[in-house]
Image: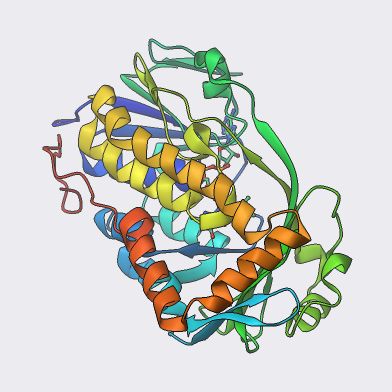
Length: 375
Ligand SMILES: Cc1cc2nc3c(=O)[nH]c(=O)nc-3n(C[C@H](O)[C@H](O)[C@H](O)COP(=O)(O)OP(=O)(O)OC[C@H]3O[C@@H](n4cnc5c(N)ncnc54)[C@H](O)[C@@H]3O)c2cc1C
C-alpha cells in the first residue's frame, strides 16, 4: 500500500481506540484495532460532549454527525439538596454548545468511520511489548506503533508502566440511565452533602439522568426526598437500563509513551466524571496522536499536562459537588447564594472556557498522507 506511514496496532475499540483509528488512518497509518468484545457496543447510558470534544470530532471528520445531537438551549438550575436555587442559568452558560447522546450512538458513528477490515473484534490482547509486538491467543504481530486504548484496567499500562501504580477505587457509586421521554423541568444539577444528581435533556426527546454518591451510599433510595423531578425520573427508570459503577481513577503516568507504545483515553488518564470530560480527553488524545505520531514524546508532552490537570480538577471538583459533610455543603450553598447570579454565570463560563472547553488542537506538522480532516 503506497504512502503508508507505518503499521499501528490499537488495543481497545472504545471511544479512545476508534477515534485514534480514525485519526491515524487519516494521517496515513495502516491501522488494526483489537477489540475483545465480539462486536462494538456500549452498554450504557448517555454521554455529554462539550465544545472541546466537538472540535476534536470535527477534526476527525465525524463532527457533523455528532453535532446533530447538540441539544437546544434551555433553562438549567443548579440547586441545593433541599431545593434552593443556587444558580439560575441556561444549559449553554455551563457548557457552551453540548451534544448529549447515547453512548451506543457515539460508538456507532465512530465505528462507521473505521473500515471493517481494520478491525479484529473478538480478539483479546494477552501480551504487549515495548518493541511493538501485540500478542493474542492466536498470533503475535509486530507493529511500528502500538496504542493502548484498553480502558481503566489497561493491560498495556499494567505491563509496560509497572511504576504507574494501581487503579484507585474511590468507593463512590455512580448511576446512569436514559429515559425515552423528554426531560422534565427543571433540568440541571442538584448538589448535596454526600451525593449529587443530574437531569440533562438529550437529543431525540430523551433524558439522560446521572447520580453519584460517596462511600456508604449504595442505593438510589438516598435521593427519595430530593427536589423535583428526582423522584419522577427515578420512578420512570427501567432498572435493567440503570448502569451502576464504582468510580475508578488512575494516577496519570509521568510519560504517556514507552518505546513504540503509547497510551490514550482511560488507559492513560481514567478520571472521575465530575467534569464529564473523560471521553472528551480521549478524543483530544486521538487528534493529537494523529498529528504527532511517530513522535510519541511530542504526543506525551502535548497531552500529559492537560490530562493531569483535568484529572486533578475532576478529583477535587467532587469536594465541591458532594463534599462529604453537611457543614461544608451549607458553606458551599451559602457562598453560591451570596454570589449574584450573573457573576456566578460569568465565572462558570470563563472558567470552563479557559480550563476545559477552550482546547487548542495541535497546529504542528502531521505526517498526513491523504487526510482531509486533520491539520
Ligand atoms: C459515571 C461516568 C460518567 C461519564 N460521563 C462522561 C461524559 O458525560 N462525558 C465524557 O466525555 N466522559 C464521560 N465519562 C468518561 C468516559 O466514559 C470514558 O473516559 C471513556 O469511555 C473512555 O473511553 P476509552 O475508549 O478510553 O475506554 P473504554 O470505554 O473502557 O474502552 C476500552 C475498550 O478496550 C477493550 N479492551 C479492554 N481490554 C482489552 C484487551 N485486553 N484486548 C482487547 N480489547 C480490550 C474494551 O472491551 C473496551 O471496548 C464518564 C465516566 C463515568 C464512569
